[in-house]
Amino acid sequence: MSHNHDHDHDCGCDSGCGCESNPYSDDPEYEEIEEEPDPQLDPRKSPGFDHTLDSLADIEVGRDVTLGEMTPDELTASDTDPVADASARELLADLEDGSKTERRRATLALAETDGSAAVVSALSQVALGDDDSDVRQFAIESLAKLRADDAGDVALAISHDDEDPWVRAEALVALDRIDREGYAERMEAALTDDHHAARRNALISLFKVRGEDIEDDAIEMATDPSERVREWAAHVLGGIDDDRARRTLEGMATSDDSDIVALTARHARSVDPARFRRRFTGAMEEGDTLLPGEDLLNRQPTL
Image (cartoon, rainbow, N blue to C red; front, side, top):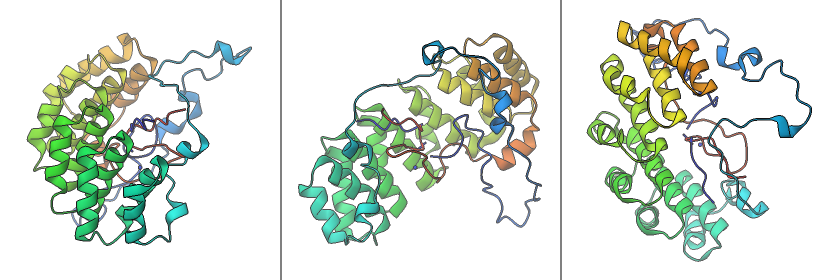
Protein backbone atom coordinates (compact mmCIF):
# COMPACT_ATOMS: atom_id res chain seq x y z
CA MET A 1 0.00 0.00 0.00
CA SER A 2 1.24 3.44 -0.81
CA HIS A 3 -0.33 6.40 0.91
CA ASN A 4 0.83 8.67 -1.86
CA HIS A 5 1.03 11.61 0.47
CA ASP A 6 -0.18 14.91 -1.59
CA HIS A 7 0.08 14.16 4.51
CA ASP A 8 1.24 16.57 2.22
CA HIS A 9 -1.45 14.07 7.94
CA ASP A 10 0.15 17.73 5.01
CA CYS A 11 -3.21 20.24 4.81
CA GLY A 12 -6.64 21.04 3.67
CA CYS A 13 -8.18 21.45 0.28
CA ASP A 14 -6.97 19.35 -2.61
CA SER A 15 -6.37 22.46 -4.65
CA GLY A 16 -3.78 23.44 -2.05
CA CYS A 17 -4.72 27.05 -1.60
CA GLY A 18 -2.55 27.15 1.51
CA CYS A 19 -4.75 29.70 3.25
CA GLU A 20 -6.42 27.46 5.82
CA SER A 21 -4.22 28.60 8.69
CA ASN A 22 -2.19 31.66 9.51
CA PRO A 23 1.48 31.06 10.43
CA TYR A 24 1.99 34.70 11.41
CA SER A 25 -0.85 35.12 13.88
CA ASP A 26 1.55 35.25 16.83
CA ASP A 27 3.77 37.88 15.22
CA PRO A 28 3.15 41.29 16.90
CA GLU A 29 4.02 43.03 13.62
CA TYR A 30 1.51 41.03 11.65
CA GLU A 31 -1.59 42.93 10.59
CA GLU A 32 -4.59 40.68 11.12
CA ILE A 33 -6.66 40.20 7.99
CA GLU A 34 -10.38 39.65 8.10
CA GLU A 35 -11.23 36.12 7.03
CA GLU A 36 -12.88 35.73 3.65
CA PRO A 37 -14.61 32.73 2.13
CA ASP A 38 -12.15 30.47 0.37
CA PRO A 39 -12.88 30.74 -3.38
CA GLN A 40 -11.53 27.23 -3.84
CA LEU A 41 -14.53 25.92 -1.90
CA ASP A 42 -17.09 27.52 -4.19
CA PRO A 43 -18.82 24.55 -5.88
CA ARG A 44 -19.44 26.67 -8.95
CA LYS A 45 -15.67 26.71 -9.53
CA SER A 46 -15.51 22.92 -9.64
CA PRO A 47 -14.70 21.38 -13.03
CA GLY A 48 -17.85 19.74 -14.31
CA PHE A 49 -20.21 21.99 -12.36
CA ASP A 50 -23.64 22.21 -13.99
CA HIS A 51 -22.88 19.28 -16.30
CA THR A 52 -25.45 16.49 -16.55
CA LEU A 53 -24.17 12.91 -16.51
CA ASP A 54 -26.18 9.91 -17.64
CA SER A 55 -23.97 7.46 -15.78
CA LEU A 56 -20.73 7.21 -13.78
CA ALA A 57 -19.03 6.01 -16.95
CA ASP A 58 -19.33 9.56 -18.30
CA ILE A 59 -17.00 10.92 -15.63
CA GLU A 60 -13.54 11.73 -17.00
CA VAL A 61 -10.71 11.48 -14.50
CA GLY A 62 -8.14 14.18 -15.20
CA ARG A 63 -5.83 13.70 -12.19
CA ASP A 64 -3.17 11.12 -11.43
CA VAL A 65 -5.11 8.29 -9.76
CA THR A 66 -3.73 4.99 -8.55
CA LEU A 67 -6.23 2.17 -8.18
CA GLY A 68 -5.39 -0.97 -6.30
CA GLU A 69 -6.72 -3.35 -3.70
CA MET A 70 -6.74 -2.86 0.06
CA THR A 71 -8.09 -5.00 2.82
CA PRO A 72 -10.18 -3.32 5.54
CA ASP A 73 -7.23 -3.90 7.87
CA GLU A 74 -4.85 -2.06 5.57
CA LEU A 75 -7.29 0.78 5.03
CA THR A 76 -7.21 1.59 8.76
CA ALA A 77 -3.45 1.15 9.20
CA SER A 78 -3.00 4.86 9.91
CA ASP A 79 -5.80 4.92 12.49
CA THR A 80 -4.05 4.97 15.86
CA ASP A 81 -7.22 4.89 17.98
CA PRO A 82 -6.87 1.12 18.62
CA VAL A 83 -3.49 1.76 20.31
CA ALA A 84 -4.33 5.08 21.94
CA ASP A 85 -3.78 3.65 25.42
CA ALA A 86 -0.74 1.54 24.56
CA SER A 87 2.53 2.25 26.32
CA ALA A 88 5.72 3.03 24.43
CA ARG A 89 7.01 -0.41 25.41
CA GLU A 90 3.94 -2.07 23.89
CA LEU A 91 4.21 -0.02 20.72
CA LEU A 92 7.88 -0.92 20.36
CA ALA A 93 6.96 -4.58 20.72
CA ASP A 94 4.36 -4.20 17.97
CA LEU A 95 6.92 -2.44 15.81
CA GLU A 96 9.31 -5.37 16.18
CA ASP A 97 6.97 -8.35 16.01
CA GLY A 98 3.52 -7.16 14.91
CA SER A 99 1.67 -7.64 11.65
CA LYS A 100 2.21 -5.16 8.84
CA THR A 101 -0.80 -3.13 9.94
CA GLU A 102 0.23 -3.23 13.61
CA ARG A 103 3.73 -2.08 12.73
CA ARG A 104 2.44 0.83 10.65
CA ARG A 105 0.05 1.84 13.40
CA ALA A 106 2.72 1.58 16.09
CA THR A 107 5.10 3.71 14.03
CA LEU A 108 2.61 6.55 13.87
CA ALA A 109 1.53 6.21 17.50
CA LEU A 110 5.12 6.46 18.74
CA ALA A 111 5.04 10.12 17.72
CA GLU A 112 2.72 10.71 20.67
CA THR A 113 5.13 9.26 23.23
CA ASP A 114 7.85 11.06 25.19
CA GLY A 115 10.45 10.31 22.53
CA SER A 116 12.80 8.29 24.69
CA ALA A 117 16.16 7.14 23.38
CA ALA A 118 14.70 3.68 22.74
CA VAL A 119 11.81 5.14 20.73
CA VAL A 120 14.07 7.38 18.64
CA SER A 121 16.51 4.54 17.99
CA ALA A 122 13.75 2.17 16.87
CA LEU A 123 12.13 4.76 14.62
CA SER A 124 15.47 5.69 13.08
CA GLN A 125 16.25 2.06 12.31
CA VAL A 126 12.96 1.34 10.59
CA ALA A 127 12.98 4.69 8.77
CA LEU A 128 16.32 3.83 7.21
CA GLY A 129 15.86 0.14 6.51
CA ASP A 130 12.40 -1.34 6.98
CA ASP A 131 11.10 -3.52 4.15
CA ASP A 132 7.69 -1.81 4.20
CA SER A 133 7.63 1.62 2.55
CA ASP A 134 4.71 2.83 4.67
CA VAL A 135 6.57 1.98 7.87
CA ARG A 136 9.57 3.95 6.61
CA GLN A 137 7.35 6.86 5.63
CA PHE A 138 5.49 6.91 8.95
CA ALA A 139 8.74 6.55 10.89
CA ILE A 140 10.32 9.66 9.40
CA GLU A 141 7.11 11.57 10.04
CA SER A 142 7.13 10.49 13.69
CA LEU A 143 10.80 11.37 14.14
CA ALA A 144 10.14 14.87 12.81
CA LYS A 145 7.15 15.33 15.09
CA LEU A 146 9.22 14.24 18.08
CA ARG A 147 11.98 16.71 17.10
CA ALA A 148 14.46 13.93 17.70
CA ASP A 149 18.09 15.06 17.69
CA ASP A 150 19.04 12.91 14.71
CA ALA A 151 15.77 13.35 12.81
CA GLY A 152 17.35 15.81 10.38
CA ASP A 153 20.23 13.48 9.50
CA VAL A 154 17.86 10.55 9.03
CA ALA A 155 15.45 12.57 6.89
CA LEU A 156 18.30 13.96 4.81
CA ALA A 157 19.63 10.49 4.05
CA ILE A 158 16.18 9.20 3.18
CA SER A 159 15.44 12.16 0.93
CA HIS A 160 18.44 11.14 -1.18
CA ASP A 161 18.43 7.37 -1.04
CA ASP A 162 15.01 5.82 -0.49
CA GLU A 163 13.78 3.91 -3.53
CA ASP A 164 10.15 4.81 -2.86
CA PRO A 165 9.37 8.34 -4.12
CA TRP A 166 6.60 8.90 -1.57
CA VAL A 167 9.05 8.16 1.25
CA ARG A 168 11.51 10.67 -0.25
CA ALA A 169 8.69 13.20 -0.47
CA GLU A 170 7.84 12.61 3.19
CA ALA A 171 11.49 13.13 4.09
CA LEU A 172 11.35 16.57 2.48
CA VAL A 173 8.29 17.39 4.58
CA ALA A 174 10.28 16.34 7.65
CA LEU A 175 13.21 18.55 6.68
CA ASP A 176 10.83 21.47 6.17
CA ARG A 177 9.38 20.89 9.64
CA ILE A 178 12.73 20.43 11.35
CA ASP A 179 14.70 23.35 9.86
CA ARG A 180 13.21 24.93 6.74
CA GLU A 181 15.98 27.46 6.22
CA GLY A 182 18.76 25.11 7.17
CA TYR A 183 17.76 22.58 4.53
CA ALA A 184 17.01 25.05 1.74
CA GLU A 185 20.00 23.80 -0.27
CA ARG A 186 18.60 20.26 -0.17
CA MET A 187 15.24 21.60 -1.35
CA GLU A 188 16.94 23.29 -4.30
CA ALA A 189 18.41 19.95 -5.36
CA ALA A 190 15.03 18.24 -4.91
CA LEU A 191 13.48 20.55 -7.52
CA THR A 192 14.97 18.14 -10.06
CA ASP A 193 13.86 14.91 -8.33
CA ASP A 194 12.38 12.42 -10.77
CA HIS A 195 9.08 12.28 -8.86
CA HIS A 196 6.47 15.03 -8.85
CA ALA A 197 5.69 14.84 -5.11
CA ALA A 198 9.30 15.59 -4.20
CA ARG A 199 9.54 18.45 -6.70
CA ARG A 200 6.28 19.93 -5.47
CA ASN A 201 7.25 19.71 -1.80
CA ALA A 202 10.62 21.33 -2.49
CA LEU A 203 8.97 24.23 -4.31
CA ILE A 204 6.54 24.83 -1.44
CA SER A 205 9.31 24.81 1.17
CA LEU A 206 11.51 27.19 -0.83
CA PHE A 207 8.62 29.61 -1.36
CA LYS A 208 8.09 29.75 2.40
CA VAL A 209 11.77 30.63 2.88
CA ARG A 210 12.47 32.89 -0.09
CA GLY A 211 9.13 34.29 -1.21
CA GLU A 212 9.41 36.21 -4.46
CA ASP A 213 13.04 35.16 -4.92
CA ILE A 214 11.74 31.75 -6.04
CA GLU A 215 10.30 33.30 -9.22
CA ASP A 216 12.76 31.76 -11.70
CA ASP A 217 12.17 28.25 -10.36
CA ALA A 218 8.39 28.72 -10.24
CA ILE A 219 8.33 29.90 -13.86
CA GLU A 220 10.42 26.93 -14.93
CA MET A 221 8.11 24.54 -13.07
CA ALA A 222 5.08 26.06 -14.77
CA THR A 223 5.95 23.74 -17.66
CA ASP A 224 6.69 20.68 -15.51
CA PRO A 225 5.43 17.36 -16.96
CA SER A 226 3.30 16.81 -13.85
CA GLU A 227 0.06 18.74 -13.48
CA ARG A 228 0.46 18.52 -9.71
CA VAL A 229 3.71 20.48 -9.93
CA ARG A 230 2.28 22.97 -12.43
CA GLU A 231 -0.72 23.47 -10.16
CA TRP A 232 1.56 24.42 -7.27
CA ALA A 233 3.73 26.55 -9.51
CA ALA A 234 0.58 28.54 -10.31
CA HIS A 235 -0.14 28.98 -6.59
CA VAL A 236 3.39 30.20 -5.94
CA LEU A 237 3.33 32.59 -8.90
CA GLY A 238 0.19 34.14 -7.42
CA GLY A 239 2.39 35.35 -4.56
CA ILE A 240 4.93 37.06 -6.83
CA ASP A 241 4.32 40.67 -7.82
CA ASP A 242 6.18 40.74 -11.13
CA ASP A 243 5.23 41.03 -14.80
CA ARG A 244 6.99 37.77 -15.70
CA ALA A 245 4.95 35.92 -13.12
CA ARG A 246 1.74 37.49 -14.38
CA ARG A 247 2.53 36.61 -17.99
CA THR A 248 3.28 33.03 -17.00
CA LEU A 249 -0.03 32.77 -15.15
CA GLU A 250 -1.82 34.21 -18.17
CA GLY A 251 -0.33 31.50 -20.35
CA MET A 252 -1.20 28.77 -17.87
CA ALA A 253 -4.76 30.06 -17.50
CA THR A 254 -5.40 30.01 -21.24
CA SER A 255 -3.22 27.22 -22.60
CA ASP A 256 -2.51 24.51 -20.01
CA ASP A 257 -3.85 21.08 -20.94
CA SER A 258 -5.06 20.47 -17.38
CA ASP A 259 -8.35 22.04 -16.31
CA ILE A 260 -7.12 22.03 -12.70
CA VAL A 261 -3.94 23.92 -13.58
CA ALA A 262 -5.77 26.43 -15.76
CA LEU A 263 -8.36 27.03 -13.04
CA THR A 264 -5.66 27.46 -10.39
CA ALA A 265 -3.82 29.94 -12.60
CA ARG A 266 -6.99 31.98 -13.12
CA HIS A 267 -7.54 32.12 -9.37
CA ALA A 268 -3.88 33.00 -8.76
CA ARG A 269 -4.16 35.97 -11.10
CA SER A 270 -6.90 37.44 -8.91
CA VAL A 271 -5.08 37.36 -5.55
CA ASP A 272 -3.06 40.12 -3.96
CA PRO A 273 0.56 38.84 -3.98
CA ALA A 274 1.64 40.38 -0.66
CA ARG A 275 -1.51 39.19 1.11
CA PHE A 276 -1.05 35.73 -0.36
CA ARG A 277 2.55 35.50 0.89
CA ARG A 278 1.56 36.57 4.40
CA ARG A 279 -1.11 33.93 4.60
CA PHE A 280 0.60 31.11 2.72
CA THR A 281 1.20 27.86 4.60
CA GLY A 282 1.04 25.46 1.71
CA ALA A 283 0.38 21.75 1.94
CA MET A 284 3.04 20.84 4.45
CA GLU A 285 1.39 21.86 7.70
CA GLU A 286 -0.45 19.77 10.28
CA GLY A 287 -4.08 19.04 9.54
CA ASP A 288 -6.82 16.46 9.62
CA THR A 289 -7.30 13.67 7.13
CA LEU A 290 -10.71 12.99 5.65
CA LEU A 291 -10.48 9.28 4.95
CA PRO A 292 -8.85 6.31 6.69
CA GLY A 293 -5.43 5.78 5.22
CA GLU A 294 -5.33 9.24 3.71
CA ASP A 295 -2.15 11.24 3.89
CA LEU A 296 -2.03 15.02 3.93
CA LEU A 297 1.18 15.35 1.97
CA ASN A 298 -0.43 14.02 -1.16
CA ARG A 299 -4.00 13.48 0.05
CA GLN A 300 -4.37 10.45 -2.16
CA PRO A 301 -5.44 7.20 -0.45
CA THR A 302 -4.85 3.93 -2.23
CA LEU A 303 -8.30 2.62 -3.10
